[in-house]
Image (cartoon, rainbow, N blue to C red; front, side):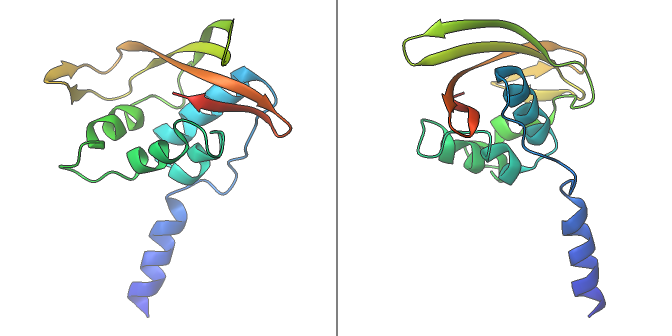
Length: 142
């Protein structure tokens, strides 16, 4: 019984119950996704993606990847982003397949990627294509 209560407490704290989905603007979508991914909230992060879209299933698989699996390095990278730091949208460009958005993040912790060390404090540009839907702006290709 104690083990179940402890497991419930730990699992319950893993994701913010106050985290809300905000798809009102392209900026809100990419910032919300980035914060959810940085906090390891695969369920919320996936909700920022277009169901059936290019990376809809991939993002959940990435954010739940285990050590030693091909997607784990990407998970570590996403979870190394400073969710409380500035996330700046640098550009928005209309494209044939949607709106291409580029935003800059800062890494809170260092990590290894592709055989190279990325230091804490490093800035990095993410990009994605977003589509406007009846639910709001959703990521289709990250």
